[in-house]
Length: 226
Length: 226
Image (cartoon, rainbow over all chains, first blue to last red):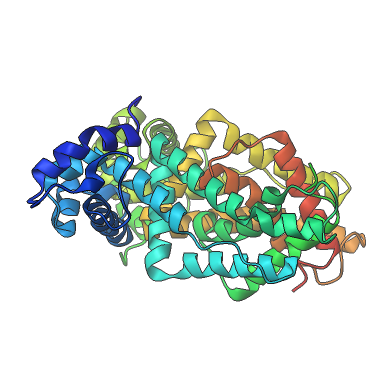
């Protein structure tokens, strides 16, 4: 697919509004000038909430454009034109989840910050609704390359957002010079996702704590220096 | 589902043979007395090879019982009665993959053995065919609880099979007393699977080496003691 989601969104913005029972034209409809609280943003919010709910309850294989439109209270034409396909819905949901992901902790110590991250990952994956959403997007990414790129982008954003945790620790002299911040963050998440999505083992508080202890010890030994 | 695969296999063994154009009765048909080279084993091999091929090329969503029967050169009734569903095929394939997985290395050092394991995991996941098979079963496990249990069993078998690597290292005094062998093995695999199935990042030789270095450092620091 050469047409990106952004292209589709920009091209069909006007049409979207023709298909909604909108009163006065919404200035947020002009590409590049959409306000967070505008009509376009509200339509997107409703559609992405419905998409997340559908993924949580039925998974990617059952994701249905007509049902999403009905659940969101949005015209079918809008959903088809703006998101194109179930893959388009998942891609935009992942962009949204990346934008809304919790900002990095700043507890004053590397151990404290990594622990906050591990707890956040564990709480997200063991939350009934968000765990189901993550299972669904990980499965979708295994079946579809566009979903895989979107999921990869989600983690790139999230890991980059938390990198300052390691950068501050480097500045404080808590890590060997040359430690790769993103590699250290990956090391905290990897054992948790491995249990969650590969071996399907329980993911307890002790697992989150062990991920932090192991990552700190490996980092101290220089395992994550570039 | 209360009926297990073993139940189905035992119950339908005789029927399987009625549906095959078999000449003389095969003694391997009696449950509990199947020989590796018997007719039942040959049918299973053909069906599981076809299942693996179908997973590698189309993934779990396209797994079709009729096509598997045709590809394996086995009667449809046999495939339906013995495996029941695409989930039954995946479950039996995972049992088979666990039985056939490479035995643990014994290089004489913990670092050597863990490196052999990391290289094996990386080679498997980056192999075009086996990588596609693993993507497919990980996706299937995300959508289906029976597949999840089967995948969990596959890794339990594999991790247990490699545990002696850590047990021998404990005996040689290469690890802190009380180190959990399986936890150490999980630590080597987790960063590789995380890149492969969660973040969809490249999985290079340096990543396998880093997984070993990090696991060894964390183990030495006591991160995997129970």
